[in-house]
Structures are given as structure tokens and as C-alpha cells.
Image (cartoon, rainbow, N blue to C red; front, side):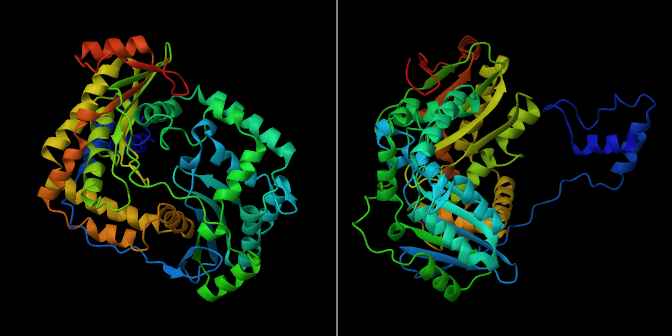
Length: 500
């Protein structure tokens, strides 16, 4: 048992809090056995760290573009011999198409699609999916929405029949609507007590404004949801959930001919309609100036959620290869600069991350962490310093090599499973990206020179950043003052992102 504890200490497993123990901690072994065991386990380990080999190219599988009327397009990735099938129907419209006064409309329409379709109510629909070993989900993102279904390959026909009911024939029952809307409003009330949800909500509202498609939360604001009627939900579905504007994604043990035959039977009788509403145009940049500091006050909160954000690059028409490498080094992994500093070195947080946006337009770049309230000022100092540091000097050659190798592994994992590959292809379809996007991105990350990557790193300089802090206002303001951080008078917002 003692040797197992020593091994865990050496490997860093099971630590109850960040930075709580070091590998050399032997306080649980008064008889000195841990030291001997440590010497034994360390025998033969070289002093120098292993070098990271130059990353080789990995080419993600290229799906076939298949013509499958009545769909606008179809993407097929055959995985023979697995006996599995993942289907996605993707429409390029999401919560960005909510009218400003009806935020949550797209999400509620999607929820109602799960509450009954064709001749089945919600329970019967779920039971029908369960009978074929599947589960149906309707998911809404900012720029697109999709229906997902995973099943065994021999269930292609009934799976497509269920998807056709959900997409073409949702019931929109008045009784289900009353129940769904009531529960939705309860969830929005509960959201006010989730600090992790309040930070992006306040950040987006301050950065973009609630009149902007990216300035409202996907699940809506309470006033908007309260105003939505069942007629409006049905009208949204008719306008946006259109097969002639949708892409069918199929991954698994299925052929183009087999898929075409099954689609023609399941979606028979679907004719042409008026042109769908125009897509939101990229890059959808913010149309307003934003403050430097936003505070969502949660008196006596033991933690502060810190979020540093500003508009990032669209995924359309932008070579993000160099930016992705820098972002990975900055906050894209457990060993990133942010996590190594704020978690491992300082012990301020359980994890710090950064993330480039995955949007059709100029979505938000974010970096942040949940930190102990009493170190809010110190944590923000370190966070801004890491952003400024990587912007000024860029990653080291060793960091670049590691980022390329790790991003290659991420590409492999994205296509490792049938469902994972379907989700990835659905995202690309939803954002209007070409079939070759992942293929070109994977090889593109090997091209940028150190100089090109250093130049791209300038994007991360935080001179135009919006800082959002969710926590005890007095603690936040005193912590920033103690660190000499002057971001001006804080703009205080409530749990729905509205200015107080």
C-alpha cells in the first residue's frame, strides 16, 4: 500500500487540490520507507527530458459529397465492418436567428421537436428510438442546429423514418408546449445560481450587445422566453428546419446507394418550397464598443470566475493554423502556460484554459479560470501577463513541436469513433465549411514558420480585452486595486447580462 501511495505521489494522481502535494512529499511515511521506494522507482530514469519528435502529417478521412434529394447536400464517410451508424441532419440556422425580443426561440423549437412527432408523443418517440437501440437529440448552436441519431447499421431504414418524423412532422402539442415552456423558465431561474453560466452570458452581452446575433445566450433570456408563443415556435420551424437547406451527414457501415434508397423512402413527397431566409453574413463583428471590466456581483462568493475575451477570427475564409498552435500553447492543454502558471505554480485554480471561437462569424476568443476569491487580483495579473508574454515573444520551438504533435492527436481522436466523426462533419457542414477543411487544416499546421507563428501570436495581446469577473464585487475590486490593475469603473451586470 505504501509503495502504491508513493507511486501516486510520483505520478501526481489523486491530489485533492491543485498544488497541495509535491512528488517529494513523504509526510505519510514516518519510517522513511517512502524515500527508499522513491529511489528504487527512480532508478534508470534519465535526467534529460525526452525530445518531442517532429510531428508527421495525419490526414483526416475525406468524406464523399453525395447527391441525395431532397437534401441540399450530403456527406458520407463509410466505415465498413463496424456495424455502427451515425446520422446527423444539419440546418445552417441556430440561435443567431432568434429575433432580439424572442431569445430562446430556436432552442424552444428544437425542444418541442423532441416532444412528439408524426403519430407519436414524446414518450412514444423516445420508446421508438429505444427499440432500435438509438437515441434522438435535437441540438441548437449559435450558427446551426442538428438532429442526431446513433444506431446499429442494420437499423438505417427505421432510423431515417424517425428522423423524417422529427424534422418534417413535429406535433407541437399545446399541452406539451405549456409544460415545456414552464420547465424552461424554471431552468432559466436556476441558471442565475450557476456562476459558470453567468460569465459567458455577461461577456457576450457586453461584448456584442443583445441586439447582435452573438450577444444573446442560446437558451434565451427570461423576458424573451416568456413572450414566445406556440405559433411563433411553429413559424420558426417552418422557416428554418428545411430539408432543402439541410445537409445529411452519415458515418458508418453504409454505402451511397443504400443511403440514397433509404432516404428516398423516408423523405418521399418532400417538394420544393420558397427560398429559405438568408444566412447571416460573416464575419458578424461586434457593432459597439465594449467596456474594460464587467462585474456580476455574487456577495460572499468563495470563488471568482474570470473571463478575458474579445472577438476572434471566423472559421470561414481564415487560415487559423498559426493561431491554433499559439492558442494550444497558451491554454489549450493541461500543460499549457495558463494552466501551468495558475494551477500548478500558484495553486489559484483547478484549471485555466483559452479557446479560439468556432463560429461562422467573429465569435469570442476567451481565456480564463475559476479562482479562489481572495486571489482574484493576483490571478488576473498572471492571466494578463501570460497573454501579453505570448503575444510579445510567441511560443518556443519546443512548445511549437509539442502543439503540432498534440493537435495531430486531437485530429485523430475527432475521427476515432463513428459518432465523433459524424459530430465533426456536422459542425463543418453547419458552418458552411468545405469537405476538405480538416484535411487542409491538419497539413496546414505543419507549414507556418516560427516567425509566422510569432507574428500570429500578436493577436493574443490583451490591449482590447473585456474582463468579466463573476463573484463578490467588494473582493474583486479590492483585489484589482491591490494589484494596481486599473480597468476603469466596473460595469455591473445582473444574472441575465443586463446593466444595472
